[in-house]
Image (cartoon, rainbow, N blue to C red; front, side, top):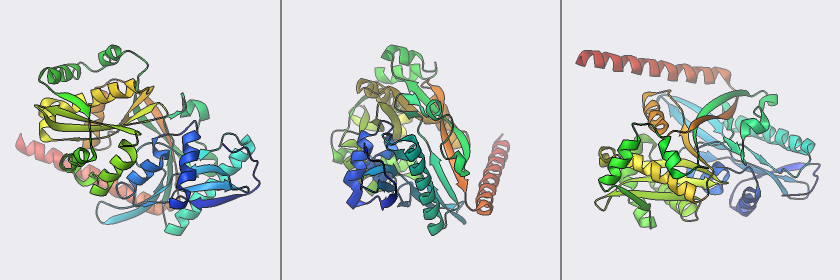
Amino acid sequence: MSLSHPTSFTVCAADASTDAEWDDFVARHPYRALPHLRAARSLQTGWRADEDKSFLIKDSLGHVVAVCPLFLLDQPVLRWFRDRRLASSTISGNGPLIDLDLPRRLQADVLAFIEREMRRIARDIDASVVSVVLPVFAGERSVLSRYRHHPLLPFGYAEELLPMIVLDLDRPEAEIFAGFRKSSRPLIRQAERNGVNARPVATREEWLGFDEANQWTQADAALPRSAMERAWDELIAPGHAIALAVEHDGKPVSVIVVTIVNRVAHYLLSFNSPRAYELAANHVAVWEGICEARRRGARWFELGPLDYGVQKDAQIAHFKMGFGGIVWYQSRASLQLNPFRSATRELAVQSYRALKQRWRGAETAGRS
């Protein structure tokens, strides 16, 4: 990290000309997380995010003193309503990274400079919200135990705590497995007896062959072909992530991708064929992902958010809770720049969800 004591700062867009500086700064920072990686930025752009607005901060000597991942989300809400938002990540927590060798006063100055730049970008693109989600861990400690509250609260942001399911991997595999729900353990053992097994995905061609399962599993949220290619080229092939294929009778039925950054493993995504659910191959995929992450030195395994907002998210949360773990919290700070637009968006989403639940209830009653 830089040992300079800057008196002024400049902003540099994160692009090809600054890639090496970004990579070097992130690689040496003790609080780095998955979404800080340039490969993760690349994966999100064109998949869950519309445009990469990330930037670096340099001091008066030209040294990088901070990086700030940031993305434009410009997607329709309920098809007829659009809302432009800025978010630090669309896959898990990150937030800005600031040079820890700077004196605390200068770190605070850098954070204030970053916050002003995020507001400026939001104004320029007419974004209604700026949202920054912190990771669960900063080094070996949880972020909330290290910072107590989100650092952006003094700038007028509102904080929200998001539950995340986390497994402690600093235990024998048998003990981890014993912590799974009784409903999950027999499924995994039976699948293994039926010949379901996992192995690393060997080639780029094999990985891209899972695109059909990607489309079937993810539906509207499926990775575009270009994102599938970037996931292999920039995350899996360089070793930032593990891709495990789950097979039955020599045929792949499921695949899981687990990232490992700074001893924290993250269940990034999985694709399943229809047969995967019949064979419980999706359960085997997660179990094998946990075991492989542990073997590669991960201390924690993030299974994902505990979200019961809509039926699909509730089903996913129930599935992930089957693997044990405890609930830790991520801190998200949001700044409403256009409260009326944000309130309208939220009202539209909640109204749609209520109507959908009512329609589903009416359909169930009609079949009974």
